[in-house]
Length: 279
Image 1 (cartoon, rainbow, N blue to C red):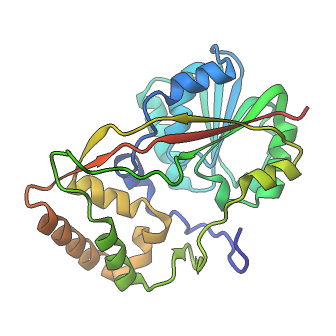
Image 2: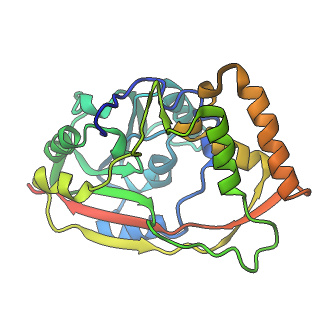
């Protein structure tokens, strides 16, 4: 992680209730692509590291005999547990409150380990080494994220675009110009360079796959507000006593942009890197 920043348990405090509604889904077709490239057939075990409210693990649960989601945030684990029960997979899904740095944590071995836009929050060298040793021969570490550098056109959409730049400026006015993260700050943002980290851990020759997006999505004011409060840098706790005033200003901005309270944006593509087990 970035120099001078240390993880703390306030990083995503209060965001779990907003996550499922506020975050955009992965691109349609992700499950089909993973099924094909990983030869998933309902057997084997999945560990989803930094699972949040279970978004990715629950999407993939039917493709494995067992799924373990690991996350340090108790509210995220509670959300994942509730959603797993609602979807009828409580018998095969286990949710463990732990930091990735605590792995293997007695969880056993796995066929696949997934990181859904979570790896950058961890001591990546330590976690990569732990996952390497937890993977069965023939297994894989899979890094999944929104497609980087993608330009998503808003032309031809039925509702106004979400005013992302104005929302970011409103957050900066309330929280300051430096990105907040838990009790600390990240002046330079989160780190990249996952390939170098995984190569140091002994993984090699990843296979890259892109699941295209571009589908038109409709979002309400409530969806957009939930999206803002689902982010680490604008988590509800960061606003303190000013939370209500910030939300009122945010909703005012949104209604000024779209008086009907509806917005359009395009589904982002999803980028997948599959790193075969080095064992």
